[in-house]
Image (cartoon, rainbow, N blue to C red; front, side, top):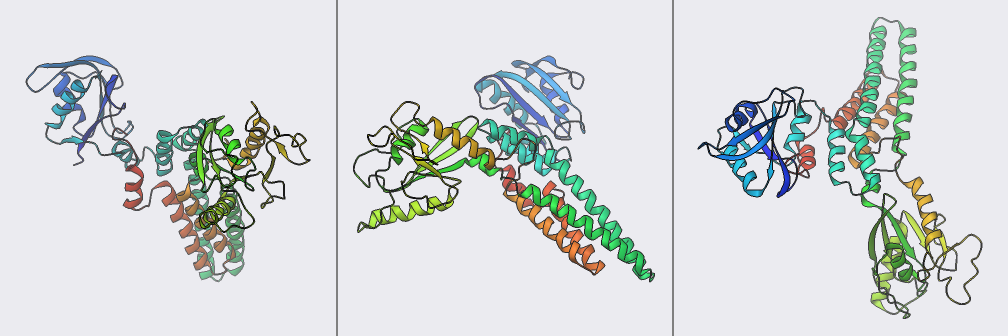
Length: 428
């Protein structure tokens, strides 16, 4: 029999209200021992909460939700207590003393919802992202996943793959009956439709990954020594993240500074000046790291007057507040880290570029696990489209369907689930 679990699901105490959630076959009986009679399902009722000795612990609102029409698919009872530490500890202790009840593990409520089929793995991943969301962009993407947007798309793909598998089986049957013409026509249809499905998956894979919303757009400032990189970085992030000095080579290593602006997470990196040559071993290491950062940047801000090292770089004409640099060359963005608002034009250019780097609101954003499985499914479907042996086509389609099942969690390893739910809070 499944254990009955309990935990505070409303956040850390002390707080105004603490919601203590109990889920499992013994949930109603356990809460009834504390509260006496229970209100009807999905109706709130004020009850006196008493310990095993009959002493009053608190007066609380009690709610019940009958399974399987509950968030976990099990009977759930909630006790809305006053959020003092002593109150919560006393009620938790009373539940802990009951036979068959135990404290919930991190993410266990959500895991039970997954196992009961109330949500799938993509929705659970979306919920995890929602709990960790710090920007508006992260919240929107997480809500799309948690609401089942990706699940519905995968289910549609899976249904199409199942239909194609049925056609292959029919082709095999016709082949056994020496009806070669019908078998060839069926296989041609499978090849066409499998290729169409592979292309559709590839279009989703072409979209920016969801990790960019969480980790931030990596913006690297690079250029020769004394080109104004550190001053401009401080202005962009609104604080003194980097040391500014007229001495060439002040910045010897990468300096990273995160900032959130317009609902987007950014990670700015100041780098060592790219000297033509140096005898300083430490400076040489800094230059090597700067070159690595340039290669890894989502957006490169090039502050040198020479041509940028990357064709997609934003060429910046920095230090426009310095005498002799008032005129901005064509094709460059004027910027000043000293003048108030001197970075406004640069922010406009960055936000315009960000629109091409971040997931759009109308398309599901895939994480690394989902991308790998989608890439595998698309490859299986392309193989099915190119294969001439119906038995090989059938096996390729089965592999694609297995990838879809792993995407939704219908077929996956315990290790994947353990890693996901370990990051949840106790009450989720």
